[in-house]
Image: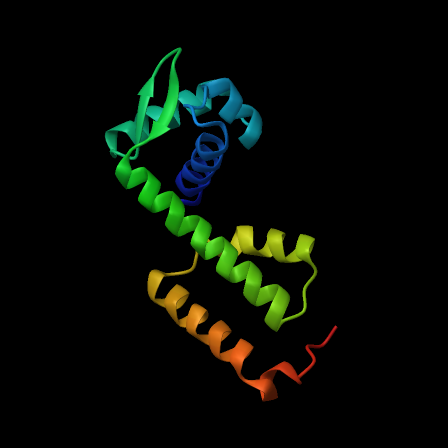
Length: 134
């Protein structure tokens, strides 16, 4: 799945969850800092892939499959962010920026391994005593 598709799904999910309604193409364009016509084109593509339901003048809403994909993307983002903050000592802003880049390249298998590592890291005192380089 391309980075742009993942970004669309993520933004639609967060917006819809927060506002409890479909997102309009103009709203999504503003969030992604792109033209509304580009949002319309992507909405049509995502509709064909069964990730969204799109109705002009009504908006875009995720399908069950779209929600599943968006949750996976957000899970990758938050897991990477936790790793960068708690294990590597990055500040919140830098960790968020890096997580946005890395979430698109991380496989599901690597995500599970990273979650396991973080859990072990939190439980194991000897790891916590190691100070990351600054």
